[in-house]
Length: 375
Ligand code: FES
Ligand SMILES: [Fe+2]
Image (cartoon, protein in one colour):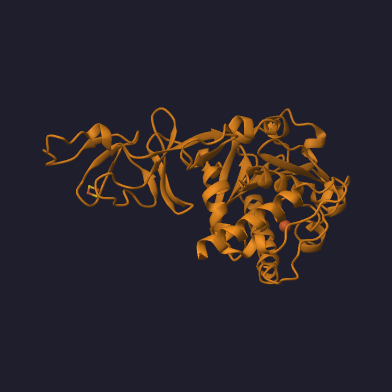
């Protein structure tokens, strides 16, 4: 009975999502608060859009050498990401013998040896050795580590937990035209940080992707460079959206960056989201990316990285930028954590969204969510 009630509520919310996304283009509307607080709805998202989606797990240059690996929890699944001799790969960090976590942290390894009974795996996931396993029926070939879909695009590593993930190149079609000239694969990582925020995962996607709040929430940190009034909607594709945070004329560009950039491209930051959980900002010499890892309806782990174009910047500038973005993230976090509590109100019914230049990306996100809602 309880299960039935739960499903009815989730079904009702899905219907509301579809109707909200269908609002006329000149009357866009945001989602009611329940979408951001309801544990049952979160569970539904967890099993559908989040399981099926591609998630940015790190930058490619965090694992530059063969055998370099890192571990993470992705939607509750322990995962190893490793640069194998042939490609970047992702495996379940779970020994095929009796389920021990195979490896912790990050490092470089030729093989992964389980700490429990010493089964040994190659970086291609194959079981190489299992001491004393003399049962006639034992076949090491059937004991390869479970593998997840893993690809590199634009210098980012994406993993999906789905057995049949969507074609990432279809999802990202159009993103290359938008950010390719920055040469995103040539940015080098200079910082990574992990924090837990008490907010719903969709709130951070929406917050990062709208320019409406820039001058209000970031008066000291971002307003001079990227004031709200100069925000312009950028292109969107099947699985991403974008907007341009243009700099005022009197402001210098943020360094030179890639040689083929136009003056316009040097004079703005391009913010993009690869749905469902990556938000990022790329400028001539600066690339900031946030990977959102949903924990519950009201909590996320945020892993953010900063990268700079080749070696163009000196250490002092890099430090200033890390400090600046630490503060920007703190400002956003403060707002989102405060909003999370009021989103529980029955009066958080969803409200009108601003025009596309300011909040059109939120509408794109709703359309994407609605397309993926399964009734
Ligand atoms: S659980 Fe890994 S070798 Fe036994
Ligand atoms: Fe912000």
